[in-house]
Length: 196
Image (tube, rainbow, N blue to C red):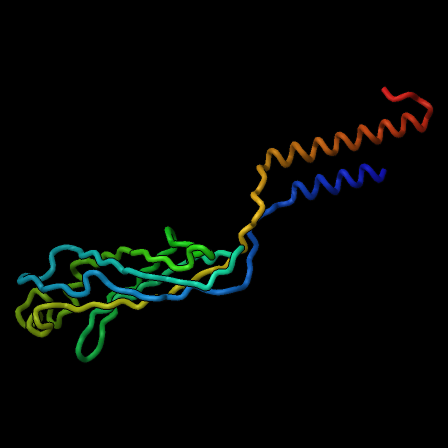
């Protein structure tokens, strides 16, 4: 009976999930950011097509060996810089294709594309960018900047590679069969029957 219990325990341990577990630790910090382009000249008839900006970001985290810091969400707020007050053009949320920081690569740079419609750009000029006075009020161009918010999680990195589920199942069943065979052999000897 004891052999059966040991084999069952081993089989359950083999079938249990081995994976990354949540850990507490450092979070990703924004080291630097820039926006390309940071300014646009206003066309004489205003903007007629969408414009794509790149938010160029460098992030870092003091990651220790055995952990990883994964960016889960980046929120970029795009502003048009005015003399009196700055206009929020929009907030852009990114949650896929973001980097993971490790002890060997604790700083990474990446770019996120932001597309702004022509109507959103034209609305940045008082009276519209297609008007002479709207363009004049902006000095013939628009200046932009971005503010970025990061969200990240810390996970433990397993130093033991995860075994395949099929292999684990086969190992568990084999151990169980071995334990039952030994149990059957021990019962046969106890009853005076020779082992087969």
